[in-house]
Each structure stands twice: as C-alpha cells, then as structure tokens.
Amino acid sequence: MGKKINVKPSKEQSTVGFFVGIVFCLIGLFVAIPNFGPFGIFWTVIAVVITVMHGKNAFTEKGIATHEIIIEDTTTTTINNENREFESDTKKRLEEIKYLYDSGFITKEEYDDKRKKIINNI
Image (tube, rainbow, N blue to C red; front, side, top):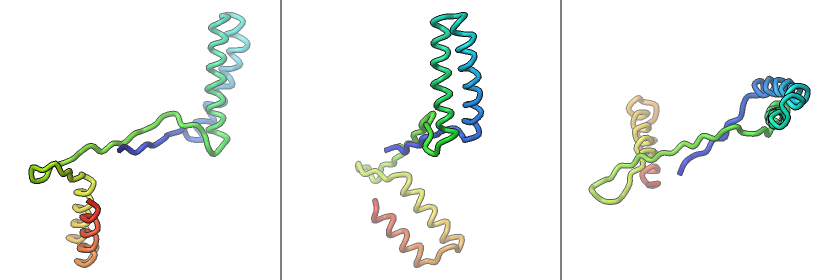
C-alpha cells in the first residue's frame, strides 16, 4: 500500500502566479478575444482558472494541490523457501535498533524490548 502526499505551491509562488494570472486575464479580455475570437475565449478561460487556483493557494489556508506523490514500498524477501514475506521496513527497523545498541545509545534491555516488539508485529 502506498503513501499519498499532495503537494501545493508555496504562498509566495502562488501570489506571483495570481498577479501574473490577472495580467493574462486582461490580455485575454482586451487583446486575445477581440483579435482571435474563439481562441481568445479559450485563452481567457484558462487564464481565469489558473488565476483562481493561485489566488486560493495564496490567500487561503486550504489551497489546491497541483500534484500528488505516491510512495510505494514493494521490496520483499522470501524466508526459508516458504511464502512468508519479510517486509523491508521490518528489516530496516531491526537494523536501526541494532545500530543504536552497538553505538551505545540504548541499553541491552531497551534493545531486547524494541526487538521483541518489532518481531511481534510481523
């Protein structure tokens, strides 16, 4: 199962996009529509949509995400030729607590307790 992260532009970037969008809307209204007809209308509608999106991101807390990142961990290892899968996250956690113990950051009791909890979650 992947983890989804929605990403939106920064307030500063959205503020600049909002004001540039206003300029493009004005170009659409006063130049593109009178000179290019249907293309000018298309231009102006797109400029309005982009301007509204940037305005919402710049001046509200909620905002609109511009893209989504999905992080998936599909790495697995087969143990003892059985169909049990040992997730890489579990292996990584075991290695991390071993490093902490070997480096003297946690005691033997803490290491044993953490290791037991990780193994019980498999």
